[in-house]
Length: 252
Image (cartoon, rainbow, N blue to C red; front, side, top):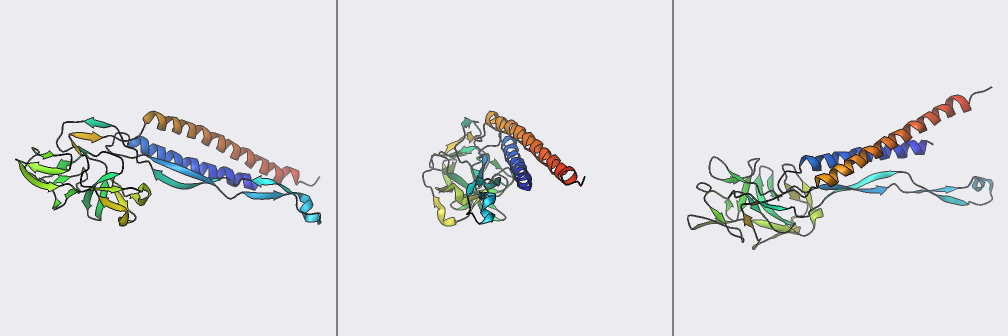
């Protein structure tokens, strides 16, 4: 019976974490370039149950396996491309495919992002909403106002003069990326990163998140129901343990 308590408790812990992941997806549904997360579950190793006759020298008879509950195996990011929408703003940029990323300079080093919603800071540099710099081959990209163009190959021009080539990278194994906050990613292994010279970039366009609000809300409701049922099972097992301790074992 104690095993049942542990299994129910493990289930509640997993469901709580799943709700946290779904809530984060929903909160970022309107964030450009955001990629939703999903939880991958696995069961604890099953335990083989033997018959009581096994202890009487008659040989062990296998009754069958018993599950010990579930645990979180991993939280994976789904790198499906989001819908592209035209904004008309020259500082908005969108990448094709789902595994190409802009290169960003941060105080912690280079990071990668799919969020193409950039702006010009007070000194004319192209930056993210958090103030980190968008990088080109020559480093930070500085412009004189927002009257500039970026062609599909990532070449930045202003007043018919070439300014810089946007740095775009591709990572063929998304598992090599970890989220670092502010919609930025870091590569676990930089050898998995390759430069893209023809990124098929679009100016004045934003990639929306790949979160389906309807799907995520349905999952959240199902998770709440599962949590309630699991909590009810936990209470029943607690009541049974109480009876076993206070009634069955009582001396009459």
